[in-house]
Image (cartoon, rainbow, N blue to C red; front, top):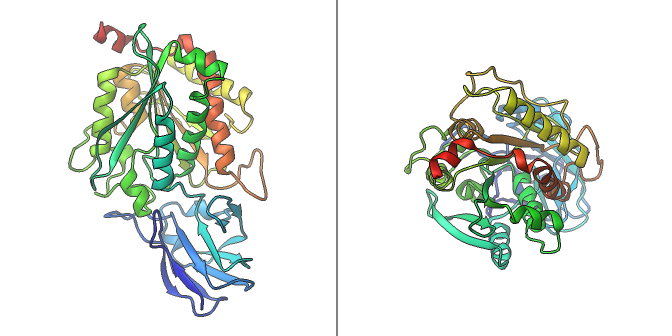
Amino acid sequence: MIQINSHFDGGNIICDACEDAGDIRLRIRSDTKADFLQWFYFRLSGAKGIDCKMRLTNAKDSSYSKGWEEYRAVASYDRKNWFRVESQYQDGGLVILHKPELDSVYYAYFAPYSMERHADLIARAGQSPRVSQSVIGKTVEGQDLDLLTIGEVGGNKRNFWLIARQHPGETMAEWWMEGFLDRLLDPNDAVSNALLDRARFHVVPNMNPDGSRSGNLRTNAKGANLNREWQEPDMMRSPEVYLVREKMRETGVDFCLDVHGDEALPHNFIAGAQGVPSWNAQKDMLLTDFKRTWQQINPDFQTRHGYPIAKKGEGNMKICVNHVSEYFDCLAMTLEMPFKDTADRPDPENGWSPERARKLGASVLDVIYRLFDRLESSVVKKSLD
């Protein structure tokens, strides 16, 4: 008997019909207390060797319907190795076509990053003598908000902040973090060692544990889009942002990277803070050099495609990088990665994948190393003296 289930960490699907393998009808559940929907993750059982046609009937009502164009879902038998399967966006529905080789198979919007894997990541990082591991507070539903501080105190070190998964469905962001942390904590990596001699890294691998566990695309347990809460965060509605922002003000910020995924664009790219009131030519050159350097170091990153650039003074100050850039007078950027395959360097079997996200995360350390002397916040330095 064919069965559909999503009652597990990060799961999201509503099954309307699964009696006929050729006509399985599903719907994506909306985010908690919000209208966003796009993330899906479910298990199909009992269909070994059968041609299955699964239709996500409400794909047209998703938050980013253009995200389904040229998109292919991912599948896995062991929840470790994920591969792309034939998918078609037809008449407002996403159709997934697959003939499972085993009795149990999982399908998802992108390779999931469970809260159990997050706990493993935090525990593994905490074994390093370079790491100070702390819980800076609780989420709406009482989960721990984990902060990893890497590097020793003293020596007038710079403070670099990296955060991920403000939008919980953007799981590639925590895969990126895994690669970044593994390299930063490698005692045999010369670049990491040199950086930690001169800087402390403050890392929040998952800003939205509640949304991650609930299978949300963009919001926390209160229905708040965390990346629109930075101007006036509230401990009742968005404690995750409030707690991180307060910690940033305690340490100062010389550099900030906020890691995300984009549903529609098949590229890796940076969105800067050009719309903040204090934007100037010096900041623009630093942003340009950061992007160009990353492109030279890792060809999976590119600079031709991205978001429209806001005019100076017209940026949304509720967004993390705009708030941080303006408040701390530092380079703050959003990294976007694709849910789809990358148009620049396509991989028909895997598309954009966890492993490539991990390698992109590791490669940013070379960029930071090359531009280190220019990554500094004069405002915070003065306030901390």
